[in-house]
Image (cartoon, rainbow, N blue to C red; front, side, top):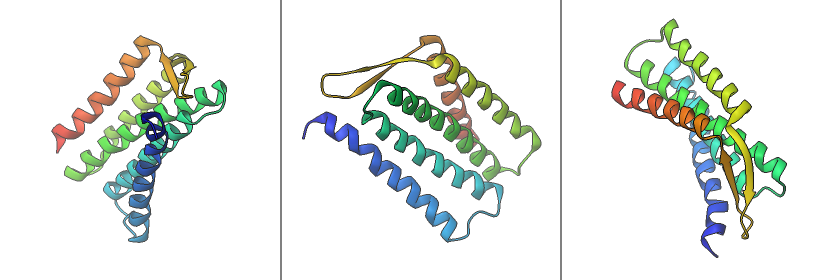
Length: 155
């Protein structure tokens, strides 16, 4: 087993962990407040992020690899939104102004799907490598970084 084999299957362990955590939230009926709902959605989208990473790494053709790469990044973008909303409503109550973060998220998703992922290249070991538009990637990373920092500073 080489490092590429490990990279291909490691996201499954992460996805399983996130989906089990989400299932426990539902099982324990922890979905009644905004805090619980945003945490549940964070777990689901983090699990989807890991699942799409696995599908990206194991894709058989470039078209599916491109789609899986877009879905993976989209899941990461949405996960950062729900984690930010979770931290905001954990400390305070839900406010209408918080939905504006969702509007920015939709704009970033449209930008990424339109211009973000230019192509994918396959290495000799079968592992796919994404080729991003550098400007769009910088915007997406700034978005994820700012939402992450906003959540950390808020707590």
